[in-house]
Image (tube, rainbow, N blue to C red):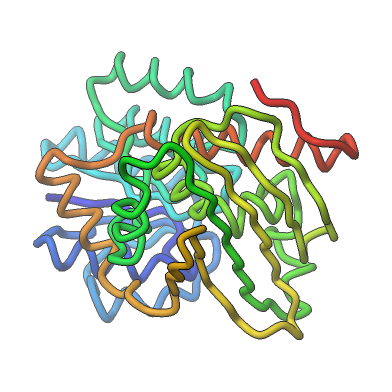
Length: 296
């Protein structure tokens, strides 16, 4: 299998490279405007590197024309570019493997589904937390219950640089609820079903803190997410049964599991990712309007 990677210099890119290696794939091309991509030497030293999209695109089209082609494009770029890069993958006849969030706006889900159908290729969102043993334990604990009350505390400290990066620009990252919380909201909806009432935002402080609660078909979620640099790291889910699930370890091989599932035909779908997109967009609406978000 031939892979191309967009976002080679990012934090999560090495996990994608390791996953490609673990499943016996070959990384033939990568793109990142930042040229600190020495990590390639640890996985695929022969990979062609591009800092400009136009040259990267031309190379991928040339591979297609030569009969070699690219089977999968893995997307670890900035959040607001995921949509466009998924479209690029389909245009060159490849499947897309896309980091969260798949899109920033729920309305774009339908457009991607249409392109997927027209191209005959798939878009696979990376929902790796679903493969975490603790997440599967939470899912099991919720089975058969009419209502589960769940709370999550997720403190992941970030230094002063965070306020000056693209992650602090809501138009690019989707804000703290999207950038920090989307995988947690995906886990909550995976266990509790669709959001049924407008999310309530209790506290909000720019890129540093958001808290509130969300009601689902089979339960509710109280959440506190923060990037406060002075707060102690904490990644904890708690159920009304008193069970506590810590997410401090166990992340090493989750991307490899995602890739194995995709190659075996069991990868997650656009539809699987859509509810978390709906949740974070509703939270952004609530913050922007100074009240609880509308629920479509």
